[in-house]
Length: 126
Image 1 (tube, rainbow, N blue to C red):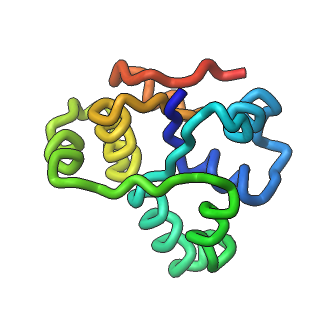
Image 2 (cartoon, rainbow, N blue to C red):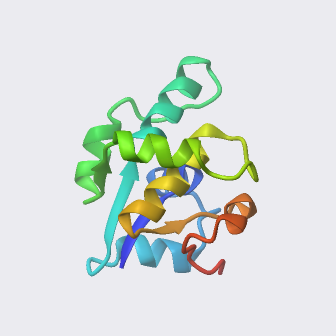
């Protein structure tokens, strides 16, 4: 399975936070799955970190590499798709993840109910 991590899922994974359910943790750790993180997620994290709203490791790229998590760049096609999504949800970072999941055939791992109206595959919440 090809999985795109939402920002909160990535942060829980990196912090080994018990808020991340065991099923989600197992999905990320399963070597049979390709796990990716969007450049939009790194951008969101860096903005919140600069504003003092988030404390995360400064070596995000290294942490992703160490965890076998691939980076997904943002393309013009992704940006156009995100901009043309219906206005169910106005968070620009989430809209980018939705667009990327749709265009790249990825399943989102998120616990955010706002993704549901877009019809992209989302792992069951367990």
